[in-house]
Amino acid sequence: MRILVVEDEEKIANHVRNGLEELGHVAEVADNGDDGFAMASSGSYDIVLLDILLPGRDGLSVLRALREDGNAIPIILLTALAENQERVEGLELGADDYVTKPFFQNELVARINAVTRRNSVLHAGPLMLNLVTREARYGDEEIFFAPREFSLLEYLMRSPGKVFTRSQLLKYVWGYGFDPQTSLIKVCVRRIREKIDRDGHSFIETVRNAGYRFNAEASRCHAPSS
Image 1 (cartoon, rainbow, N blue to C red):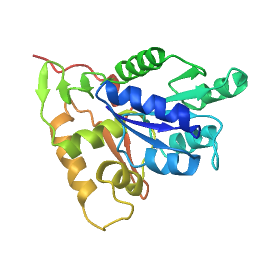
Image 2: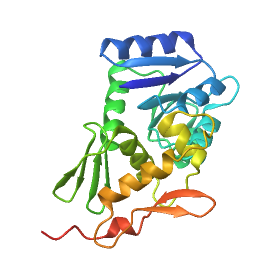
Image 3: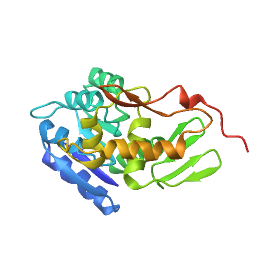
Image 4: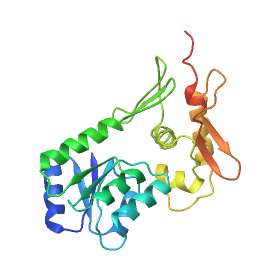
């Protein structure tokens, strides 16, 4: 996995990074909240380990901003013993878990594995995406998506009912920090729809003058008949 460690205490950050790299993961460190937010927003990581007390933007502000942007990347908070209220607030803001300092490396790794397993499969009625194997199925039928198609559908499925703008989708799926004024998204959505819209249900809705959203009601549709 690619793991982002947002931690300003150099000793802790290096210890965590070295331990993760020994297990074969790729770990990168940001030592302040502003850089952490920018790196987490890039879509380059599988999970974020986020300290609460940081220079610049604090950890809870980073978490809040990521979730408001529709970024559903798994986040584990790194907290001190005295930060009980912050832990509660962090979980309410959308953090997936927390680890209290000081912690053992094996505890942290166990939490990472638990969170990634919990977030590795997305279900919406008969539609299933496995984020680890990149497998997609509709009922018993396997569906083959191009990498960008899979990423776009994953992004929408993580937050059913939430409207995502073109800019958000371009940034997450293609890594663009600007709108190239192309039909990238339109074409990608059309190809996804051709593969998953069945039984009179449309999973991805176009919201006029706003963007796209995953239809939470369509996720309750029945599996296709044999």
